Image (cartoon, rainbow, N blue to C red; front, side, top):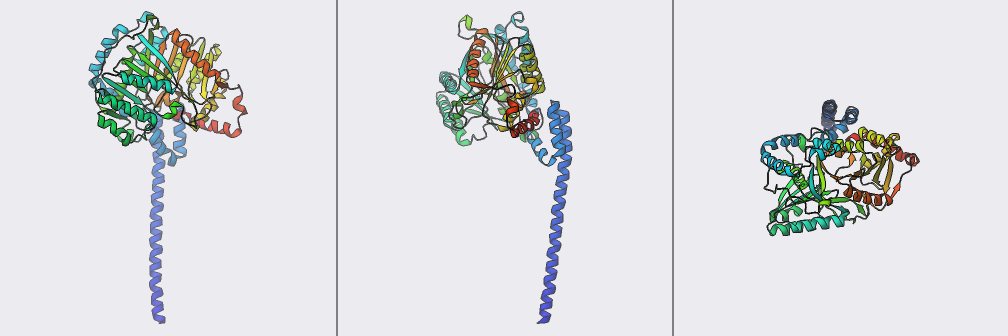
Length: 505
């Protein structure tokens, strides 16, 4: 018996020794793998930092990325793969390829638009600058209806869809499968059954909850459906940036809707958390519709690789001569070789002599825009910016708080909208220029997203937009000059910390 116990003990000791040895080997392997992974991430941080230095458009953005990539590479590298870079390379390649694929459409567009172009001698110098910047023509014989808030906007859009005889184009950043989204779908399906073609484009990330259960009936009814952001390569497929933030509806190439509304019941003011939703859209007719359609065609070509047969014959708006508006479409995005949206805002602010009034739900400007606003106040320009009181994106909201306390913007009058959430994107400059569209005053709209603005040169329409904005200011709380310094310390610290991330928000 003692011998058997000894043998048992020796065998168990061998087993234990083997288990210990295996454990040490596994632990060593795991430690080696972890060490190698950390080393690779550290090296990737250096590589990504070099990429940021060579490709980022702004000094602030470059510095922000380099600091976090070198300091916290283990967290920053995955984020850089998702959010880094300032150019949508895949779209750039498609943008160049379209020269061959779309050249016939472009030639016809240019030829037919000639009779609606505003002559150089009748074009204000400032508009000539923007026209050269955007490479889209400044046209006359247009008409515009201002649509304030969701009920009015979607009533107008739905009426336009009912009037379609050939095709309907629908593009939104966010489309929800809620009551409003389902109503839009059912109206489109009904028109499809009546022989009207439908082209339906949505952003892959903005409308990420839009499942096949919603899209299936549209496909079955014959709609052409495109998803903006489909992968065209590893580098693009990893990106969460480069969203298509445009919101456009076009009917038969004759009428178009553009503005801040997406498709969701919150845009009708039915979200209890956000309350009444203040937003602005516009319905336009006339040759400017062709310019809007051309911008959409480039998006459609990127998403679907197709060139549909659409109406490219511009028509003068059916409006009295005194209501004929001069308009210019300003598209911009990360595929451009220049920062069109940012430069357009900059030029408009710098040209102001009497007033600059701006609606923007997100206010995270770069230093150039901050300087332009500061110079405007020094010229004696009435400079007002209307922002939301309550946040929907906390980081951006905190960043905006830090800017309202910026000493350079001390003379800018900031207002906080009270009845609900402000999502409107509008600007009036002096007494003749009105701008409406999809772009906010932030880095994302300036450099990362695809956006579209509509500039209207018309004293009467500018006065109407100014009257709407005046009412919005009356429904707002004007911030005191030193309001930033009366906020709680935690909020001021959070605001300053959030501002450090402003170039990459």
